[in-house]
Image (cartoon, rainbow, N blue to C red; front, side, top):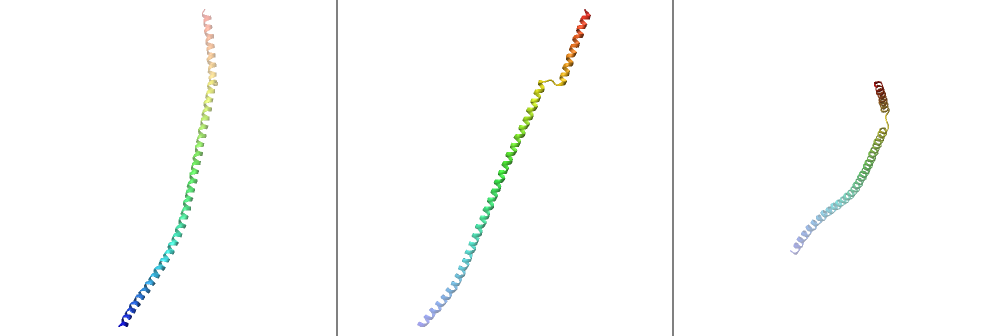
Amino acid sequence: MHNASEYDRGVVAGGVAERLDSHDVHLSKINGNIRDMAGEVHDLKVSTVESLANMTMQLQRLVDAAEASRREVLATAKALEQADQARRKATELVRDASDAKLAVSARYWQPWQRGLALLAGFATIVGLIVLAATKIAGS
């Protein structure tokens, strides 16, 4: 009976060894899958880092373009402001010149004004002569 119990133990041990072998195969497959997954995660990490680097460069380009656009807008606004100030100054100079011309013309008589004054003076002299002649003839 001693042999039977050793036999039984051998059968049990063989079954256990067989089960352990199948577990080893299963664990080996799991480890292989984990290694494959770790490689894929590493590849994904590298791809993600490269994508982030590209996105960072694109973002920097956008920031640079926005900054250049802002500078261009400021320069254009400054140029427009200067042009407006120059236009206003030119308008003021024209207005001042016009005012000065009016002031000069106010100091001097225009030709038509001179003509009227001459006619009025002539009419006054003729009137005085006629008045004097009438008084002399009436006395």
